[in-house]
Length: 428
Image (cartoon, rainbow, N blue to C red; front, top):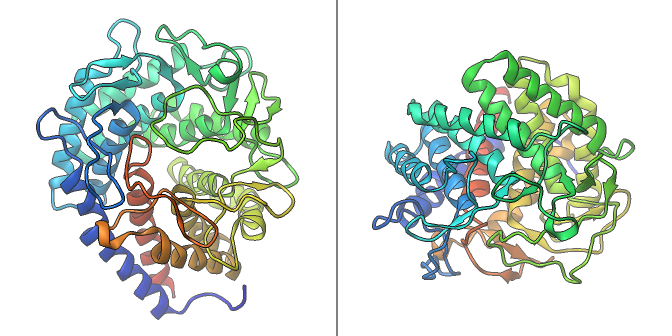
């Protein structure tokens, strides 16, 4: 970990490479492979060669994240209009099949035709409905996006908001009653859901400009920074009781469509955190500040603590990339690397470098960037990323897509990384 910041030539070269990869390789992977021309919506199960696996179950999460991908790419000027068309088609399928007309909110899993298989109300998915439909309206001016985002917000505030302790519930049954305790998830809250609620409310407020949405957004920001982050290290606890008492994180009995399981089937140590998740929160927080019209400097020390922890304990300076988990105050023994943390650290470290000017954040960005393109990106299979690698970069899970691993992290990362590199190039 030596050297300083980048030269103008380095930044320009990386920006051009990233945008070329996004437009010519990564986005076409999803535009060409994922639309279900026969039944509507998207199919996102791809093997290590980029071929459809034959699995056709359609989770709400995969459909709503694909909607976000296509809408956000269109809004950013990519896809030549095709992404906007696919966003509208995705909205058609979601609106027709997943909304609970009786109770409000969105069902969790459907079959290929859109017939509901699991009607539970999962907080994670409800957040993404607000987020993706707000983005869809901003990208396409499709009025249904605005209406669906506002209906989702109303359902969340009526049924998912915790009037006793604040914040939002995690796992609920079809009728919005909390699920059972423990692995069922009904007596837990997570930083994950609250972070995604923050990004959802950021986009909702951008869409509406409503004072009530602004207040809700600031409330969630304050809740996370005051009650969900360990104050000394600045890193996030993963899970909490309903009263926000930190608890060792457990996996919930929810079908995510993801292959990875905890090795021992038990809980994680209380002081374990996700460096990549923390850095994702950091850049989403800065985006919220921009949307609220507040100075980024208001949270400079929050960003510094998060990114310094990632630099010290999250980045693998020997082999490259960022670890999936690490203790809050010491090196990790868990050396697995997952695709989504890499994607988020790319964006967050560029924001930290722009805000704080410390060369170590640029060096962390370059470390992860090089590891991603050397090890995660599978050019010979269409350009998507492996899901999981070992420390040296050997695949643990070769799937390029399934119900949980979709385009959301990779495409969003490349759009946002290109945007930040372009801004940095203009300043160099």
